[in-house]
Length: 328
Ligand SMILES: [Zn+2]
Image 1 (cartoon, helix red, strand yellow):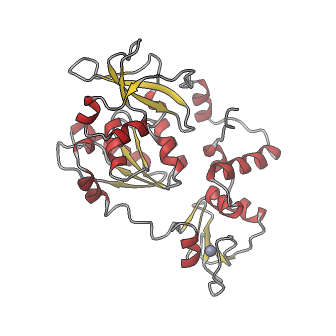
Image 2: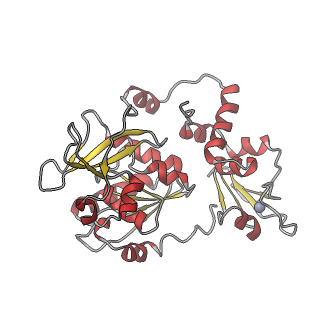
Image 3: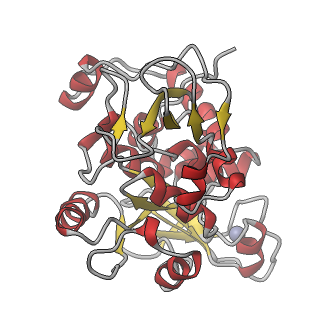
């Protein structure tokens, strides 16, 4: 049975913290122009001494609880958005929380005009899920190893040499999924100097998704590390960073910016340090900073993440990946 579609973005736009708090009958008092405070309603809250640790910003649609034991019970997270709140209250996943909100929304849905953005999205053809998977992919091919990938990483991503038929024959294939984890394409990397370097199916729109986003979402991390390419992603994962996704190019599309803004509170840009990458970094920072916190990794000029060793990647990211002091 196909998984039910969850429209995170639409829910996030429709459901306010105010609505959710009143649903759970949480009463807070005003503590500032845009801030409300009170007793923490979460089941993770065990401290009886902190009566005022829970705060909410209605303008940012965000909440936090500063109680150390409550934070620890939430795996170190200080706060979050409406989805995180419902997930904590219901002790369910973010996806289940979104479904919960989606169902309660459709019950009380009032018809409204579609925004221009929704119209244009509706008229653009989607990358449809594939009805097949490629077989007999060689994860131990010398090319894979020559790019510094362990066999384990190659297996994890489904990457390997394909000797079958079709336009990907004789290339290293990289499965591409949408944010729901549905396989939508394979990219084929040439293993020699053959052109083109990458082959994608005709009609595939790489600007409609981010490579590896579905895996980055599984861990529930609210920070995304954004890179350009497939091999940057592989290297970041080998260095221990699961919250990584790739543009599959250097240009951030509006659709990709929307995806990032929907699922994350913070983005760390780690694009190539060549001319194209530098220009793309500054353009992406401008676009993304309107909806979330943006940080930039300074790579040595002319380098790119897939050329770095795990220790170098971790040294660059270490100062940026400390937890947020507070969401408010
Ligand atoms: Zn709490």
